[in-house]
Length: 583
Image 1 (cartoon, one colour):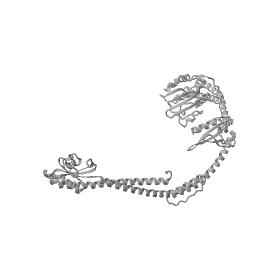
Image 2 (cartoon, helix red, strand yellow):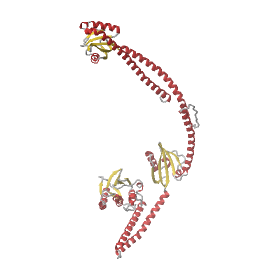
Image 3 (cartoon, helix red, strand yellow):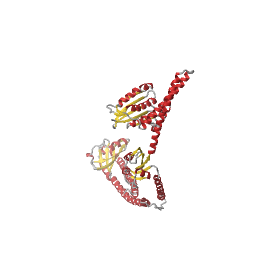
Image 4 (cartoon, helix red, strand yellow):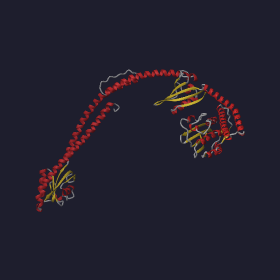
């Protein structure tokens, strides 16, 4: 019932009215009861005072006390009220309904005590004698300021309760009639109000089924008419939007079909929904693309990348040699998300020609570096000869020669590192594999660089894992990779800092963590830190360096089938992690 606006309006409207009526009814019943009790109170007080005046002559004389009981009975019959006359000591001297001789002393009655102390007493209680609730009003009987006794009038509250019940029944009947009328009125009003909304709903369903030419005419001159106009505007714009989307989709299909890179679209389950011409030509996909990716391209690396993208909802990139396409390719998997994961777009770039060009360039750099060695060695020899000759300005000559010597050493280092990097990248640097204990290797590196660490006023700490397995590695080259990283940490950690070298075992690989407390690496520099010749801002100071140490370390670790990564927070230091597979 509450799924429809009509009934919701009716229900809540009726509910509010009924609550208001109930509050007013309870208030009216309360006022009626209070009014009846106030009238009864005034009546009893008047009758008690009349009784006090009537019995005053009899109380002043002791021998007249016997006449008080007859007086109380006579007044009780005349006033239709229970009249009781009590002496100052609490004895009952007369009562219109009971024999005073058998009645208890009334001094402890609340209304009697209040009347004697304050001049007026009132109390309502259940009377055991009469078996009903009674209201008692008592006033003192005074003579020349002296209390001779108390006059009390009492009546049952049954009449008050009957009057309250009568009013309550009347209120309930009125509420029932009003509720019925309100329900009918609310139902009629809500039905008239929601009729245009029902028409809007029906039109919206027709639009959802594909009929975009729906238009409504509503002349209610209120918010519903505004809603109808907005609905008509929406229908027009929706029709225009769908037409625009159709045109854009046709353009997008044309663009994708003419792209040089391959493009493959999948749904959330990995089924191909679209593939452009480049992708079909690269992997031999037929026009029928309703199959899964692995069935269509038969490339496990790409299928793994797709699954990883679908599982993480994050972009994934992989570069490898595809056995299916027999080409070096780069695959970018981008999740297609619209409120939820809808699928994946795979962009496939053919890098075969670029890879060949890079290989040629690396070989060229290696050859040029090799050719530089002979002239640089000659320059070194000439500098040493000049330093041995007598020159008039000995100090200037020595300073000049020292500078030349330093630059020559730097060029020699660059050439050596270039050659080493080229050999590693081209795979010409053969690894002499042997079983290596990385714990011992780290201890040896710390001992070797100990003097530099002390000169920089640093501390080095080793945190080595117990029972660390051996790794198959070229000890000299792996040592070179670690030394390069530790040497950087020494250069860029301020005095008083700390360098930590730690080992641990994780997923059948030995992890070497090298941490420092230096200035850290900025976010912009972090993605390029392992590129050759790249120097972060902190390295462009007077720290020196060729910018190839980390590139060499990266290629050495990768040549061992491992991985190298870095975590850094500016102002807190950096941690380089080397992962080497176990034997």
